[in-house]
Length: 178
Image (cartoon, rainbow, N blue to C red; front, side, top):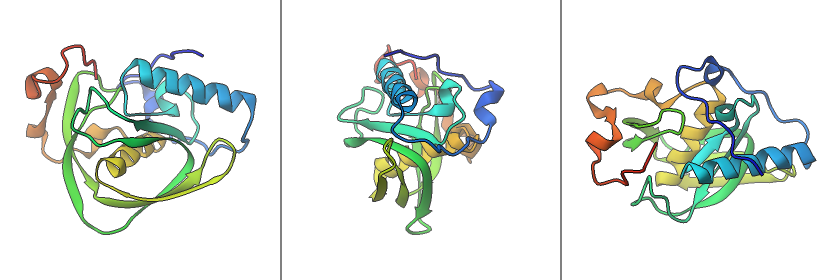
């Protein structure tokens, strides 16, 4: 398929609210999802939301066995999640560093719910329901934020924990463009 351009912070299209997907199992949707996975893999991403490539649909993909940008993160199953609804399973939040393909070269510490229930459908309209925690929960929250026009820097509470990846995490891969 095709590696698409990833929009960067400052592009007003990243601030829009995405529309629900209404048609499932279509060739157009399959092409979009294939392009998103190609784009995510090419950028060593942990996930990607359709708005990041300029498509205003409630569609996110995520997952990896290992990721050079997050070398200590546990595996997250590859998932296509459409029209997601997130429900925290407790009020407990945890700070954790995040990067974003739309905010290259920077990382920031963001509070996220530690345990999460999410629902949605896959590309065929089949229901997905999962209870997750840890990094999996963080990735889902990060990607779904994109559907609401929210980039992770908007959630940072302490800006002393926001900066350039190569300065804050010099041991990460120097080719890491995140």
